[in-house]
Image 1 (cartoon, helix red, strand yellow):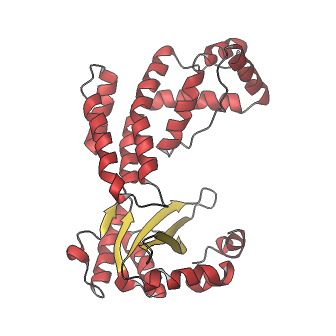
Image 2 (cartoon, one colour):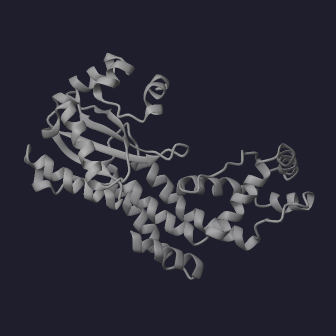
Image 3 (spheres, rainbow, N blue to C red):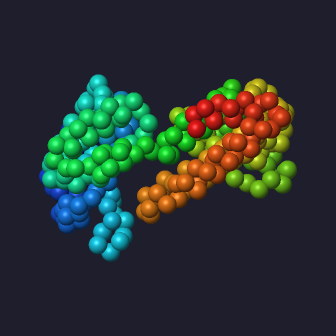
Length: 309
């Protein structure tokens, strides 16, 4: 991957099958040619993201199939730069070019993407292309698979929005402590004095709810430390209140189920379709139960989450 980055990422060029073979060696491409290309049914997943530093958008295309020994296999087919504007037709054309390059246009069984509107348009266009070379199962009803983890992400984000101001206070507190070795030392001393098991304070990525959940779940264990820390650091003016921590604790109790479910259904080394219904049912049961609580805060939060569900 280091060589791959040096030879390709700086130029923002498409990494073709031939390039991948030259850079990564013959073995990886042989695996795809002997595996995916020979299979009759291949499922695809795509993921899109933007480089934080370069502000450039990329897409990775991955093939998944069951081999002759009934073992789940997956291989990256392409890693490509998507020039703006990132519309559905551009995504579809890029996907189709990749499939044609590997000669698997007629073998695509389904494709899983997140719930973005651009992906809806992309899959609609791709379905039209595929229909010209292959008869889709059930008339294409199973072709477009929406990523369950992404939908859960949208629901969880709705829950976090209810305490966004409190989350900002906790995040700022963690960042304030971690930013200085002196402050971190003082904080650690208080942790030891209060006989609290030590765990590293972690920052969150504010665009990823699971990162925020993990930050909150870790930080709440130190809720008694922050008031003491405030007494020893006169510049620290953002200490969460007891009411803030109560709300954080309630949100954590809801998001814990989302976090567990997302980890289970996001597995890439084992089939997850057989786990989907049970895990989603757990989420629905939780939301139904929480919506009946008398606490206005948690009830309002869950109502918004159920709308997404």
